[in-house]
Length: 109
Image (cartoon, rainbow, N blue to C red; front, side, top):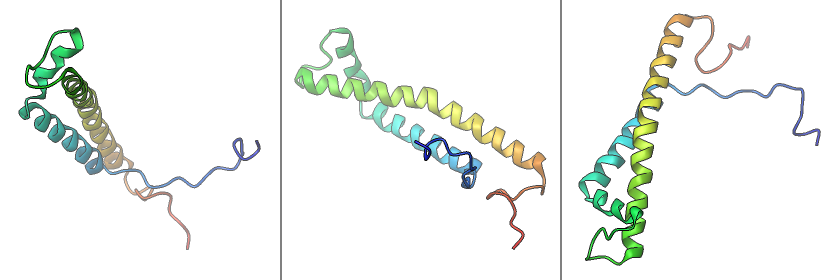
């Protein structure tokens, strides 16, 4: 129990860079483009009870519809959030100056 509520501060790792957030935003954008151009959007009609495709059984169509909805929500909610976080982090690093190394606190060694 004491292990979980330790009063000692743990060493924090380096902050991610703004480019890291932008890479993840790009990945979400790429996944959305692939899902959209693959035609998975038409299978979302299964989620409201109508048949999305006569070529596939309902299990496959519902899986593709749910997968598209997950990718769409990740794109719509994740990409702007990651881009805003990258901008805020870049501004904080710009105005923080050389007070602190971006990989963590400076060591005296």
